[in-house]
Length: 167
Image (cartoon, rainbow, N blue to C red):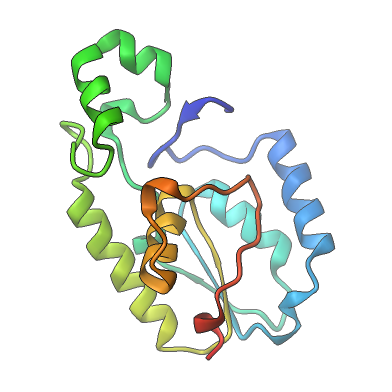
């Protein structure tokens, strides 16, 4: 579903997504020391996590790792969003974190639940692997390393490493 704002839409991986997840897992050797794998409850995250799991890697599904909900925008392309409500779309572009989508999740609520997930993860066991989404990972990167959330970019099935997850 390239070009679609999935948000909290619970869609499965595409055929290409399965291929990317398999390739990522096959090339990732860093799991040997991982004590736990945490994942969002959304299907695309769980399906990706399945490629990482071995019998010795327990999976903990944390609802707080699910992607932010954009409410009525979930599942739409940006072109569809801009056509439906050009004023709101423009305000969102100008202040992505400060403008909430009516019917969607407030950014402040999203930040609080992702912080709660991180606290649970850091309680151990460590080191841990986290399988989640762009918005969640942007906020985790902010909490762990001070990255600016709106400047955070990741590819599908990209593996990111933070030393503080293994301390």
